[in-house]
Image (tube, rainbow, N blue to C red; front, side, top):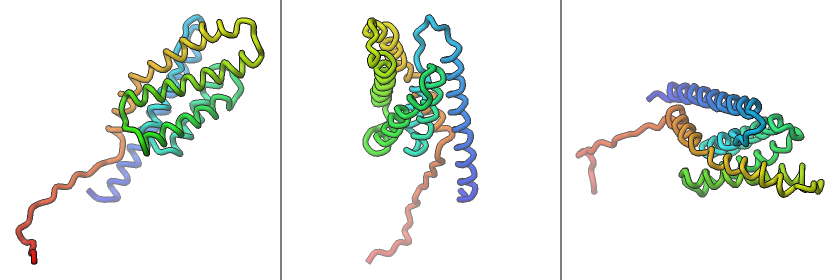
Length: 188
């Protein structure tokens, strides 16, 4: 395949892939902000960006993690940048772990997504409830934060398969070459 044609296709695939990522984040943000308050809805932004971080480069993962954290901040009504910093580090760490050490397996992303959900939930609980010593702080943690962390950890399953499909369909173009056997090789 021509090198210029391959670069154009990869650039087009990258734009399509990132547009779909943005659309997924927008839909999950809309769902999080319009869901009834009586339900304990999972924070769908976390599993989406964790799955994206599994396949993308570390810098791209950090940027998308920061953006997702800002979306979480506006959806939860917290201080802008609070979840952004936590999600930046979670996505950067996830990307580096998958880039250098871990295999891209569903159990690994479930474990890392659960860790990110626990980090975000515990930080949110600590800085907004525990530090001010509310009387029923433990009850708030058990009734509000723990179910959301569990649902968020489980919500990674459909997004893992969706993001993996997107990366295979719109990822880097892999060329396979078949070497032909030649009898013209002279051995001394």
